Amino acid sequence: MPPNDVTAILRKWTDGDGSAAEQLAPLVYAELRLLAHRYLRHERPDVSLRSTDLVHEAYIRLVDVKQARWQDRAHFFAVSGTIMRRILVDHARARLREKRGAGATHVVINEAIDIPEQRSFDVVRLDDALEGLAKLDTQQSRVVELRFFAGLSIEETAEALGVSRATVNRDWVTARAWLLREISRH
Image 1: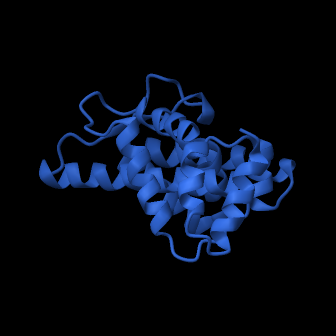
Image 2: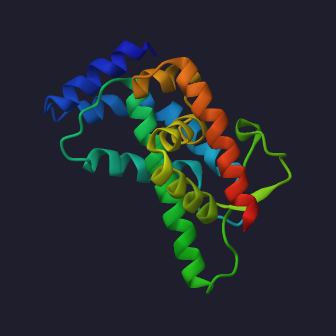
Image 3: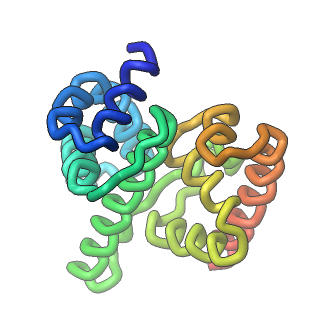
């Protein structure tokens, strides 16, 4: 799938072409499934969401976004990753409410944040830490969302944010250290 096809369709969607979302779905579905699978492979085995469920819920939310200004393919997948993160956090919070605090959904922070694989943290705590980081440094928070949650490369993240690769690298290193410290405190 050439990225330009996706970008062209996204631009049509931005310009109000109602059929663009339908044209886009088959082009991005496989990548969205991979993104969903990446999220869910770190979840506890008893989590009821599956990759297909997560993709469908995310796509419904994407289509419902009014007046989206899609810049390009990287921007679309960055927003998709953020929406999937929100769905998982909402799902985890609902489960916590149902069980009165027991059984928090856990996500393993993998090598992308350089934390040993055996350490796991609940997705709600990770989300809270990321929101705390956003209050301190919005750009660092966005770098984490794009790199870790949306799975974008350094280059794609730099392009999506309109900054240099060196800036993304610096923010990535700093943000990972800050998140590890925050998550480890609790």
